[in-house]
Every structure is written in structure tokens, then in C-alpha cells.
Length: 520
Image (cartoon, rainbow, N blue to C red; front, side, top):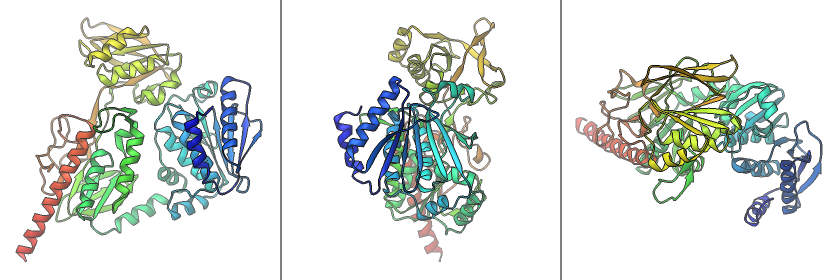
């Protein structure tokens, strides 16, 4: 199952096992079951601390990873390869006593959770966000035997996916009921289970002394700004909803200079590791609510916390633009999706649409065409805006139909899931209906700056206006990345603007300090 290189790497990892690990495989004779059996046998042969057993499970093929002493239960329903192979490796290590990289107080919080929690996490193996959720729940299961988690490959267990009407991944169920959909990290999970956790964290944040530089946002711009500030010896903090931002949802990155190719989650992990090399106070799972300029900037968070700083760098990035048509919100996650790589496998053999004819839209159509029965691309303009090479590729595929001058007017459904969309032909004014199982929206980005309206100057597109130093219309308040009026929304440009804003903030603090000393 595993090639020689993977076996060598895995054998090295398994040398970190400190206690026995047992594998229980449930195989039904299918091709995937044979692959899973072969994978389990490979693992068994690579460490004398691993033992292999056969056992029936309600989902087959599946494999249980357990610590026999703790009786932990981490299960993989399907073949945990692709993005989920790392989840399997970590499950083996954590079940075998290898230290879990969590703060002691978080581990104690997990151990102290009352009751039993049985999680089921539906994924697609091409989803780059799913492993974060699977690994967070698996860590909890490795720590507390009253917590279990099973990763379920939605493409393999289609009947179950259809029965539960799952049309987006990751989708998490707790004790048989819907718990979460989309990216959710360990802190967010604990906040939902431990209702007092968020309030305790808000109080701790409010008690912090004022920062010299406070960065709002944890994407490439925010990470770059924080590193540059910390390297200047400034007391630096980051407030971020989710570290990595939009990049975490990017699959292939081939224009990041000096790196021929990488993936969003990998780049995000490297960014976070780099930031953690410095003395930066990261306050994650916190959303900015209101910013009040003054002698000290005061940032109010949705959690109720209040953070103070002498200077601020806003790097809140952008989010997917929505169609804003009837039915879109009603069927979001029920056929309306924004990440073809994540949710595409759930529509295997079905008919879908892609809204948008730019590079993102045509790339999505090409990827989906290899999975689904048929893709309809609807472009508002009279011609596609994607690169010629992408257009040629899309037009060469037999199951992609491209419709230009198409204005989507409504998403239709049966109350539980999408069944089509309506659009108007802008050339003729005629209305049309297309029967579909899924709609993937790829029409650009919206800057996350609405919360600053009335506080600083914004462009007519809602972007923060900045000067050459990244400074906004308020002295000491800087901005960087996709949230600004930078004409090009690229990772490498966001990083550069983060560095610029940080150096601008450093210069501002020096001059402010010099002015204070002179006045004194």
C-alpha cells in the first residue's frame, strides 16, 4: 500500500511510540477495504508497539486506532490517505503516548469535560480544511476516553451522506446531531462544549497590558506584520478569527517566489510556526467588533474583551463574494458552496454549476469536471475573463458548458437541498432554469472592512485606503493585504504590504516617542 519512501518516513515517526497501539480493521471485501487492510498491515510491520486485529464495525471499511490502556477510540471510516494521511499518523502517535502539542491548561480542560461526546466527522479526501477538524477531535479523543471521533469519507459512504443531507465538508455530528459545518478549530470546539471558556478567555485578554503594535488578522499580511514588529523588539499581539485566513482554503500555490509549488494549509502552518518563533501574543478565535482611536487604540472584540495598543495594523483580508440572490443563504451548505476542492467529491456523478468565468471559476470547472457528470459555467460578462490556457482546457472537456451574459437570479431547492438555479440571458432578456445538484460560487472577494465604516476612509469598494507606508487616514492606524486598496490581491503582495505597514508603525512609534520626550 505504502511506497518505500512513505514506509521509511512512517517508521521513523513510529519510533516515537511510547505505549502499545492496537489497530482494529473492519473489511468488507471491497477494493477500498483491501487497500485499508494493506495499509494496516504496513503499519503493523513498521513498529513492534503496533498490533493488528480484525473486528466488524457498522461502517466498513474502517480502522480503529486505540490505546488499550486508556481505551481511546479514534476511527477512520474509509481510506485515510490524501490530506487525511497526516491525521492517521498523528492518531497513531498520540494514541501511543507521544506528547500532544497543546498547552497544559487546554489538556486539563479536555480531561475535565463532563459526559460522553461521540463525534462523527464527514470529510472529502481532497478537502484541505478537513484535516484540521479531524485532528482537533482526534486529539481530544486521545486525551479523554469519554470522547470518540470517527472520520468518514463522504465520497465512500454516499448513502449515509444522502440520508443526513450532507452537502458540505467538513460536517461534524455530536451524539447523532449536527454540531458544526466548515472549518472549526480546537478552541471553538471547546467553547461550544465548555460554555464558560469564552468568557474566561475574554477576561484574560482584557487584563493584558497595552501592546505597542496590535495586528488584527492572521493571514499572510498579518503574519508578516507581526514578525517584522517583533523583530524590532516591539510588544506585539495578533487578534485573529482563524490563523491563515483565506490562504487556508487555497489548494495549489505556484506563484510564491522561491517556492515552486505548495498548498495553502502547508503555507499557513509555516506562517504560524514562523510567528511562534518570536515573542508574539496570539489571541485566536477572536473577531474584531469596534475600533476606537485615542491616546491608546481600543479594540472591542465580539467576545466582550477589550484590547489596547499604541498602534494598530489591520490585516483582516477578504472573503468570498456572494451572489446575493434569493435562495443562496437558505441553501448555503445544502448545495451552495464556495470551495470546489472541499465539497466537489460530494457531488460525484451529479450536475453542478460554477458561477464566474475568471481564473478561479474556470479552474473550479476543470477540477469538478473530473468528478461530476456535467458542469455549467455562468459568466455575467459577454466573455470569459480567465487566462486563455484555462479557457482552452475547459472547452476541450466534453462535460463543461459555458454560458456568457448570464445573470443568476435565484437558487431553487426542495426545502432541504439545491435542485437548480434561474438565470436571465442579458442579451435577450429571456429567463432560463437549469436543474442542478450543486452551485459553486467563484465571483471574487469582498474586503473584511465593514466594521470600520465611519471610523477610517474606505474606497467605493469598501477597501481601506492606505498611503505608501500603509498608514490609513488616522495616524498610528495602518492596514495591509487584501483588505486595502492594493490593486493586486496576491499572497506575496500581502506579505510585502504587511512588512511595509509594520515598518510604518515602527517609524510612527519612534516619532511619537520622540515627540513625547521633547514635550516633557
